[in-house]
Length: 485
Image 1 (spheres, rainbow, N blue to C red):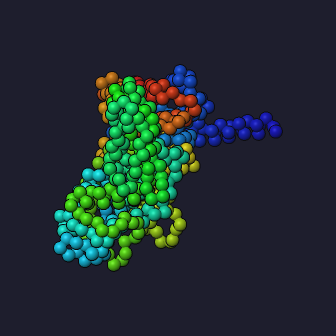
Image 2: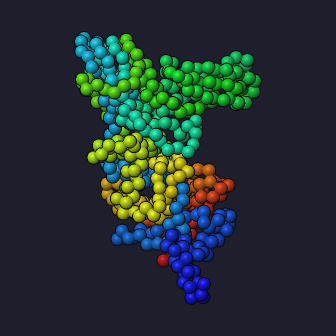
């Protein structure tokens, strides 16, 4: 190869390297921080911009801003923006109750059908309210079956790379209750005797308890709490020891078979109103001959649900929103598809990036909650999504209000607050093994000019406190540069 061709090849490689979001070296300030925290430059993506009053966002600090990395739960910013754009902040989820027989003197001579549409805010109190509303409408006894219709998401298969046993990874569904978790309390009794166990909700028909744990002397806590799947029920198994002087243990466990869990809880709550059920609990579609008897809307609006989603990084809510987006987009299909509702929701999220003017450049979203090793976004794409949201009046108020406030609430409650930082920071965090991410808005007290930022770190062996300090140092550096310019 001639010298001239070699020089041209090197130039083209450097041009491509820069176009992909890498420069040959980061700035001296960023280099110093990377070295101080022992971070490999290629594992970090940084995009911090200053948002002018005109709406133009000028570059402030950038490094590897176009490099595709795993964003973890900061992907929820995309899910939130898409949901607000498609559904609107005042959207409410519904649950329909149908009857297929005559209702005479409070007695339904037929079946009651419950058709769900993935309400992520349905909890025991609201299901009890629904049972009371049915009672108030004159339904006191059901001679037939109580039938759950979960066909809205019947072919759903979520993409998850993590065990469903962990508390943050419960299954979604059209009929879901209490984020598809049960709450378990274990309390000590007398030494040598079994511990005392309470379950909320106490659905004895669906969840059977096998308590093998014992109370011991002292204050030790050594309990193992498992929720095992059986053919037609779940078995809660508790092993181990709990000291008599120990405080009670509280635990959450994700529930398999969400529809059965929902129906069992409904039966119990309906009977607490004085109602009677003569038949069984079943799953089937609502027949065409059934009549709508009662439509329950969620008590919470989407804007309120998003606060729980982002401040506390609720994966269940994110997945329910993706299913809702998929269900609504399926109504617009002109051709038949074998894709389930969740996958259609993922298609909607990926297309949403293009819809709001963000170039994909290989970006891939396979989980709207962030519980996937395969998600790929760049710091620039996440910052672009935030900027689009801020400029969009139908999205900005609710999205910004749903973000955690540093030093105040949510996942950033224990980080330094505004008085210590000299700035108000609202942000979405993201965390997986080897991944730490932060994306949000910072308003320095001295300039009042917002800074919009994304910091992605993908490096094995991360020490979370150290990486959080690295993120904080970057934001302080950005504030200093903004104040000086």
